[in-house]
Image (tube, rainbow over all chains, first blue to last red; front, side):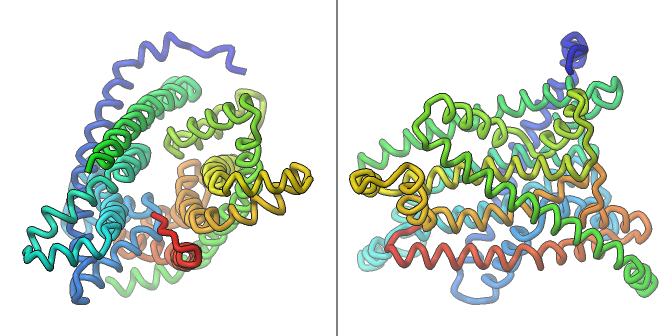
Length: 223
Length: 224
């Protein structure tokens, strides 16, 4: 059993865990911003009528969704140097997370835009709005509301996915747990502690999702 | 140069087949076990017993709130401290089954809650037992909501099975990792690994989409 469970070692390693936690938070945040950009571009391409943009975007989204993140991560990690890009592991990791989550976010945004009834679009066309006005004044404000909760869900997935970066030796939270496990042969202390930290992040984001959906719900009722 | 690499890659195809076999086997076993367990948990959770349903909810939250990699490490490295010796394969199966069960539990709960209460009341009034009510009235109707995300969950499960390579199981991802040490062409090697997963996952993704459209269209609902 765990009678040798050493809280003292955990406290001793707390600075390491803290650093790991901070790294996990900011690299996830950065990847999320990257994923939003990738997602918006992909979604815009995917909604075009012409095949020139739509087909590559669809192919990319399908390819990402049908393969594991870990394989994508290794693809970039072992593949980029071959193309002449020798990047630090951290950058490769952020790139992989952005490119991966971007494909999911593209689908989330698309579902949001397509959830706007056609009649609204037709009405705005009939009112003589330009494409940009239609998007800015009619479609996007409504799509935004539908999109926020699943986007936060994707944010939760992204934080958890970032644990895989420990496998290409990025020193984030999971890596800190691995270090404790291998340096001191204390896997229980290491992995239970990081699990607790991840739960902290999870409940934080989940709370945020709850607050936002309540806030958006009331905002929706008013209009 | 490229030619040599291709030859060398062709030489490692038995390994690749073994890896693909391992990925499929891991996914298949935990898919079956996870589905059974997930339905069981889902039914228990909607069963009305506060304590049981609270416990299941808490467990599901714990699993959904932590990275799968951490769960695998916990199972593989900590269960032995309780005197349960595990090989990597069993640990992988346990971790994947547990993960699948938790997500499927949530899907099943959503499905069961989507069945109008009038149906349950009618079944009660007709004198059906609890089990009959579940099996003949609630579940068949819940399946309409359950099926599309369930298939989607299977895709996630196959993809998540790649993470067990971290405890040394020679699945498809691990094979790519091994091969890339000999054939230094990461782009090609992991492109091929990706193709392997794509062949397994893409038909399932298509199936999930078809189901979603069919179930949605048949009942005039939009499912996001």
